[in-house]
Length: 177
Image (tube, rainbow, N blue to C red):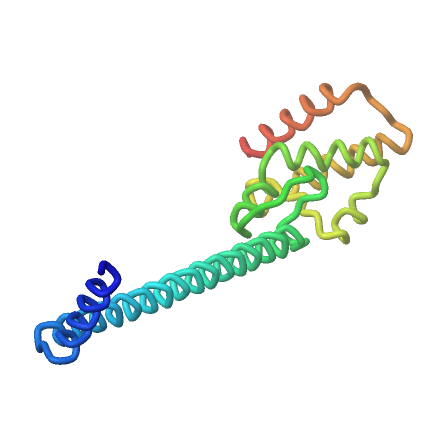
């Protein structure tokens, strides 16, 4: 009996499903929702994939820019005209380098190099080192370097402090006249 009853119910449900418009609308609505859900999932997957591609592209672009920046930085460090071998310093601009060349520390370093290494002033000038002071027409640093070179050759008059004092006195005399 129970089996017959279940078969009857199944037959009735199948009949209603074939004939009833409400059921057909319900099935169509479920199909439409399923298709929308699948479409939305595909769009989401495509959007996420596009975002990943964009993120990879941006990362690659940033990496390239960083690499270019590093190459520019390396190229900057390699420029000889912006490097002072006496002071072992590098400069970002020609103006900063020019200021450094006219500075007291650089000029003292040049004098120290002449004293320690026994180099000739002409050798330093030919190597591109500037031995000028703040005044463009004043060649006192060159003269001091030549004096130091002469002293190094045989007439040593004393310590570096004494030489610096002598240079200062000469500089004051020149400024006064």
